[in-house]
Image (cartoon, rainbow, N blue to C red; front, top):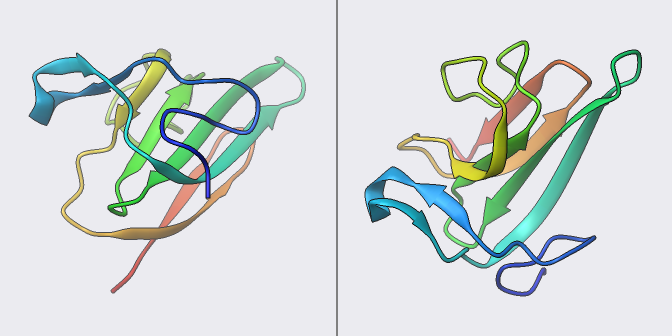
Length: 101
């Protein structure tokens, strides 16, 4: 398990959560994943918190952050889903979320 507000490389000081009225302190993350688009050098990261919510940050040119747009995110943003996420697969320009059901 990752410590609260950390990923495998550095601390995550802030996250974006609409349910918490925007920018807030990070939750405890359980898993972290990264995808790299080799030609363009873009990267996106996906996180799963202790409640099974998925979070996304980084490059989003193909919508790979699963947030319904193509806007890059500088801080992790929760993906608004009503399902508990148990695993994630990432590639250079895609993300697959696996729900518990």
